[in-house]
Amino acid sequence: MDDGFDEYVQAGLGRWSRVAYLLTGDHHAAEDLLQNALLKLALSWRKARIDAPDAYLRKILYHEHVSRWRRSHHLRNEHLSERMPEHGTGHDLAADAIRRILLRQALEKLTRKQRAVIVLRYFEDLSEPDAAEALGVSIGTVKSQQSRALARLREVAPELHVLVKEPRGARA
Amino acid sequence: MSDLKELLEGLSEQAPRYDVLARVHGRRLVRLRQRRVAGYSASVLAVVAIALTMLRLPLPGEYEPQTSPFGGHYDGRCVAERLDVPGNFAGSKVTAGDPSGRRLAGHAYRSDGRTHLITWDYGMATEIGPIGGNAEFTDIAESGVAVATATADTRTSWLHRDGANILLAGEDAEALAVNDTGTVAGQVAGRPAVWDDPKTEPRPLALPAGATGRVADISADGTVVGTIADNTGTHAYRWHPDGTGEELKLPEDIGADKVLEVRVGTVDGNWVVGSVRYTDGIQETTLLVRWNHVTGQKRWTIAPAQPDAFGGQGWSAGIAPPIDTPNGSHGGHAFLQDMGGQGDVLSDAEGAVTGLSTPEITVTALSRDGRALGGYQTVVRPTGGQTTAAVRWTCH
Image 1 (tube, rainbow over the protein chains, first blue to last red):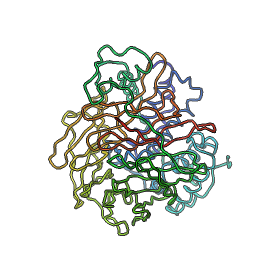
Image 2: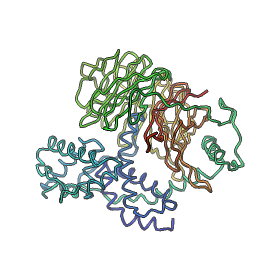
Image 3: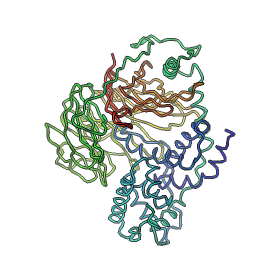
Image 4: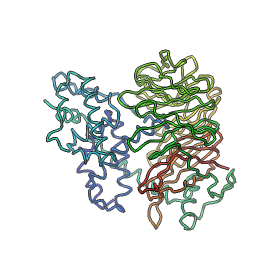
């Protein structure tokens, strides 16, 4: 494709890789999620005349992530192959690294939607309306999911007492 | 490091830059080729032929009508019918169906988001009501016994039998399948398990060392099927009634090609039905596969896409890839296909929104004989806007 798609993807690939990893907690699932989302973006790139590709891709990515959870009720089985054991970084003894491990384990206790809200609000720094737009849900749903997610994180990872904080600026 | 944002940023640094661009282009080219090149496969051509016919465009030159139960005439033999829903609800969905096609299970939801469970018997609705959280039916057996799961903070599941809803024992219990006698298969804390009795703790199903597993269905004799995943990939799997298990081998056609995805949908008697998506590095192919878990025999055929629902006699249903035409990309059609590679395209329900590029149909249930399907479709709401409506398809 010679219409700016490659340039757009290359420029943001690192950031979107991190978002996908935070959503899935698994390198191969993250890679697959990102690949599927970018394929959908590629298929509609020319005809969609996308004015805000970041918002468009974000919507695809989060929808793909959450809808997999929804589909699992009737698909029931969907495992991607080639999962490899994940490796530690080798220098995890630092307190920050331990906290990251705790956070990672705590995130696994959330539902996909709750996890998506946490990533949107706290990592991507989106406002509640923008998070609602990305997920295709109401602002009230974002608020309730965020509240439940934080409560769950406090419950399963009390060591991470810092999680009680609200996003900066109380964007609403 | 003192707040959640910084912790998330730290965690995200463990993600490398996933260089997926080349694969995205490869898959995009495959999609385009699948849409445009005649002769790729009879199954894909059948779907292409439908769309082109609907758009009044010439059929691909190499397309030949097939002799099949549908006679090669894809004229909407699967008729859609919106299911009745008692009361005043904002929308409804079918989420499960029994192997005979008689019973469907789903829910309707109010504008406040609360879901009310519903079962349909020959299309006649019975409201079960809300039973907890956002519970949805995940399976229903021919006898009418059903299972539902709520996935709010932790998973909670119920067995619905004789009008009663019985909470399943075990923490983080996810019921995924039930047989006629009420034996339930699912996950407990993410591990495959079986409830012989809903009120007693489930018994775990054995897994190979280092593997994870996910349950798909349970047969009348307690055989459970699903998938396992280990560091060599994902495998179709069968557990005996005693909880031990073994792998269901993939079709030899796949050879050394890279398996991308394995789905197992249903077990009916001795037969298991699922699908495999794989690539030879240039082109992706999806196979619909039927295993005999007693004899080891297996059959397979090419499918237009990964199916979303499976019927025990070798049927599958799902959404075919969108098709590019001079008038734009035409949204993916819901397909029905059997092991002979024959099939049909599901018609739209009354009031359906038929947009471009986005599939508006979701198929969630398929009977063993391929004659009854359930799911939902986006429809226009009489008062304005759109909603989802529970739909049953009957194929003649």
